[in-house]
Every structure is written in structure tokens, then in C-alpha cells.
Length: 357
Image (cartoon, rainbow, N blue to C red; front, top):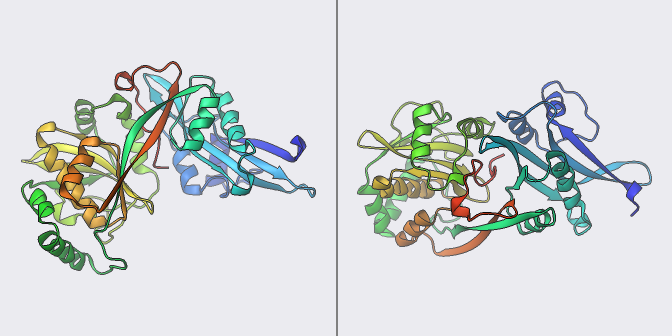
């Protein structure tokens, strides 16, 4: 295929808004390139500017002049050490066109716009690791634990209270260790879509690794982008909240854990078809098992076939309960500028990239 048969386009924040909010047709921009919910979320990022390039797409042109999109990527800004940097948040290339350098082309196109040292790889897949290495970034590995769940027989359905009874029956008859862990750690929950100042102070105080500490505006951006949210553990809810209590599935929610009338932990859960995952976790070490027990109850209640966390202590706690019949550990990569200091000493606000939008 000749170079003239390929076209690469960049879409900027103001074009995304015009396409979404005003219904303007932007040549080459469609839901095939970026889903409207995803585009809206990125365009609403607190650090976005009108002329920022946030999407790059590559099109193959046939002999009739028809442009077919075959690769795209998107990125979003965050504040890191007081400077605005960019996290790459998605990458896709059509299977029939893989191995031709198209993914590298779209990533490289945006990377040139941002400038060397101003962008990071938040995707962590093996393919993106090689791309960002080619672009001059070093790779640091952090363990991620995934567990294959056998809690729910296939096809379980029913009302929430019936499901709850089955869960309790499971705890009593199949795995008493789980019931004991939850019962010995009384707690209440508050689901929220807003990280206020006192909560953020708690996060800063109890953040184990600075590269998992996002800015307060970014955390609120994550929690407010348009995905369905609700409260799966209504029996544990501390206060009335804005979420519905009728659904058992949700996408993203911040969960505040209270014990003895004090905030002892907060984490952000993401529920998808792939897994239920704890993306960010902050807790008072004196109440670690209480916070972990609340996560275990979420795992059981949500019934997702896979659970993921990058937190080793949480993973080890779950293993001791023998909640899952299978476990495998995979490595997820994060690319930082080369040379890179020891990961434990990195003072980055931006964490593991988006993983949300």
C-alpha cells in the first residue's frame, strides 16, 4: 500500500465538543473513532484546553476515495508535580491491519504534539509497551492480581433480597471464613460522586504510593463522567445519597468506609464486563481489615467473574479467605521517561492512567 493511501487526522478538544454538543459534522470524526460517552468524559477533563489534541485516527483510502478508519488513540491531561502532562488512555488497531505500524503512527502523531517527556503510557498492554519503548520511554512493572471467581452459579437472577439470602447461605455453608471476616469488622458505607476537601486530605494522608495519588479535580472528573452509578450494598449505607438503590450493577463509584463513626477508608470501584476492580485504595492502617472486608462483600454482592487489584496486601487478604478457586498474576506496565528513578521514589500524581474512560 502506498503512503498516499493513508490519512492521519488529529481531533482537538473544541472539535470534540462541537461534534457532541452542537451536532456539527467533523470530517473523519464518528462514534467509530471515539464513543460519545468516552469523548464527553475526556472533553470534560478539568485540565483540558480548547486546542488540545486528544484523538488521532488513521484511515485507509481505497481506489474510490473512501476513508476507512483502521487505528486510533486518545489521551487526556493531568497535573503531575505541578505540570500538565498527558496520559494515553486507549489504543485500537483493526486486526486486519495489525503489524503495519499504524498503532505506532497514531500514538507517535499525538506524542509529537505533546513533546518528549510530556506523555505517559497508561494502557500497559504488551503492544503499547513496545510502542512507547520505541518512542524513548522506559518501562516500570507493577504486579496486578486477577482472580477467577466461582461464587455464583451461571444464570443466577432474582431480586436483591433473594440474592442477599443466597449470599448469606453461601457464607454459612461454603465459606465460613468470609462470614467471620465481615462479621468481625462492623462498618457502614457512603457512596459518593464527589471528593470533598476533608476526604481528599484523608487520601493524601493515607496514600501509600504517590503515583497513585491523583489530584482532587481529576478524581472528581473520574467520578462524574457519564457512566451509570448506584449502590450495591444498601444494607451498609451510612447516609442517604444520590444514587439509585434498585440496581445491582454499576460502573464507577467511590466508596467511603466508616467504623466507629470515623472515616477509615475510601476506594474507587470499577465494574465492567471484564472484571470488578479496585482502581484506587486509601485506608487507615489501623482499620485495614475492616476496609478489606467491605471490598470482599462488594466482590460477593456484585458477582463479577473476575476481580482485579494492584494492591498486594488486599490480594493476600483475599487469598487467605479462599474466595476464588483460581488466581493468576499478570504484569501491567507503566512507561516513564528514561532514565527513570526507583518507582517507590517517584512523586507522580496521575497513577495508573485512566482505566475509566
